[in-house]
Length: 328
Image 1 (cartoon, rainbow, N blue to C red):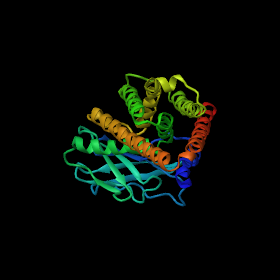
Image 2: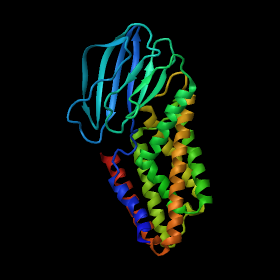
Image 3: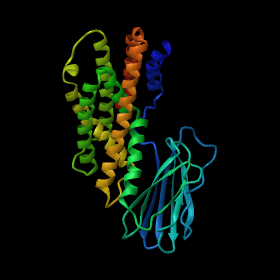
Image 4: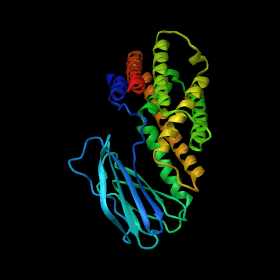
């Protein structure tokens, strides 16, 4: 069953193909903020994987709103960014906002901040590029938007993803994996909440470098295990997972800070985002354990080679990120 071994080997190829800026939150954002009665400011960012041939159209606003003056829009990094001023006659409640022709990840978080009213969070996708601003905002809206963002972040954030995969490849049995994943969850929940609420702080660049180092560390431990060497990581995996989870929590917080939290619903948004991260993490753990079980059952002779190759691929990628984040 060589094809099963190839699935694990594919982890290496996927790791090498992962972007250096692995912890950036993938969805774009659109901020629609009322700065004075009837006066609004627009700011948006659309990530892309390849530069578009022409500038995409600006956001669509409610019918009682219109853009004033010129639109400032251009490419910056791997995204289209733009700003504009707008005027709205009356309330925007019940109106629709949208982003025609979503590019890049085809996913956008919209933050509507009217004066004197709660901030609202909406989500746009390629399938639904327009969303209606509720007349009466509710927590369910915030829960849904930030839960989805949390799931997407763990599944598309390559560094967190590779750390979880490496942890499963190291432990391989469901009980130690569950205990260690729980410790990782508790730890990053602490620093995510603390940093998002301004109670804890750590510079983002060292955090990103240390997250990359955590991946390299686990990759080395996988290779050591294949050579029959014991370590403190295997004896106390939950402690190692907890320690590194604290670092990853700061990384989650940095990513979440790039889109902001809705005023008045900060606790709800934090809870939803964290639950989304955990849901995505459980999917990764379950899929990796299932793959290992199938490989062990049907292609056991190839197991050692596949694990070693996956470990080297993950370790090389983590090393690249570490160097890039230290000297980049």
